[in-house]
Amino acid sequence: MNDIEKLKQIPESGNIALDIRAILQESRALVARTVNTAMVAAYWMIGRRIVVEEQRGEDRAAYGEKLLKNLSRDLTAEFGNGFSYANLRMMRQFYRTYPDFEICYTLCIKLPWSHNRLIMRVSDPNAREWYLKTAASEQWSVRQLERNINSFCYQRQLDSGDICSDTKDTDAASIDVKQFVKDPYVIEFVGLPPYPHHKEKALEERLIANMQDFLLELGRGFSFVKRQYRISTETSHFYIDLVFYNYILKCFVLVDLKADKLSHQDVGQMDMYIRMFDDLKRGEGDNPTIGILMCAERDETVVKYSIINDSQQIFASKYLPYLPTEEELRKELENRGHLLEQSDDGD
Image 1 (cartoon, rainbow, N blue to C red):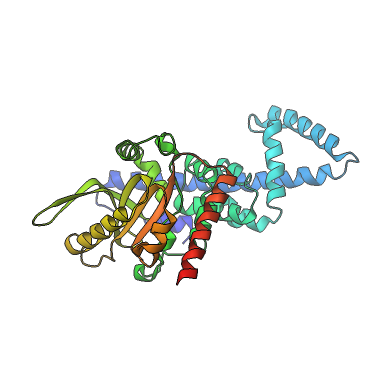
Image 2 (cartoon, rainbow, N blue to C red):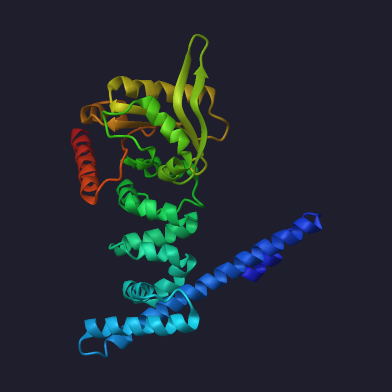
């Protein structure tokens, strides 16, 4: 359906003022999308023209610098702001990053120029393509996109296997739940010092205060239900730190926070929570409840020899209350891979 057809498909509510407002809002969005498409395509063509011109100079570096300075002066005088030396360099880099116009036409134009400027700084072409597609489909803001790039979201999703999967038209029961559980989680927005210098209560309070950021970090389909969710039997009351519902998986997700090292007792407690939740709270049509033990330190022995090793409902993930460097993340993923290999060897 093209944009004009979308305008024609706006339903009538019976209130003329509301209907006209809806038409105007959609038409303005259409204008914004059209302008963005034209602008991004124009910047790619400007970048291409600059590169072609630079190749005519014997000393390309010196000629290119002089060319950009002269262009910036002339274009700014005629067209106003937006054609600084730095911006022209960015347009040139835009073309060099995507020399095939097909990529620009099919992916880049779906995002504003501000988003494209961030993504083209990513060195891995596969990661760039993933950020282009995901930022457009998930409608990430510039801040969300920058944060996901800085927290190496692509690399962590790649490690979980959740990169190329399309779950829009897939039966929830057939989806691999592991694709929705990250390890590690990066929660630098809580502003807490690394383990062991913070407590679970402070961690929970900071996550609640930054729930929008936490939902973004959790990933697709998560909605927050309640903190300290009480679940009761005839004889006892239990309180689960954080409860979510994932509308893609169609199940509840229980998160238990552990600001220290994972223990067998933690695993047993989560197993009990899941069984109770399935028995007392799981609704008709819901898939089995899953639980995530989000811990400051993960004990490999506990993971290997507990029910986590074989369970499709309990997961143990480390959290990092800071943005890791690429090297730190690589070591975390390598350690996790080593743990999985040990588990496979023991089967």
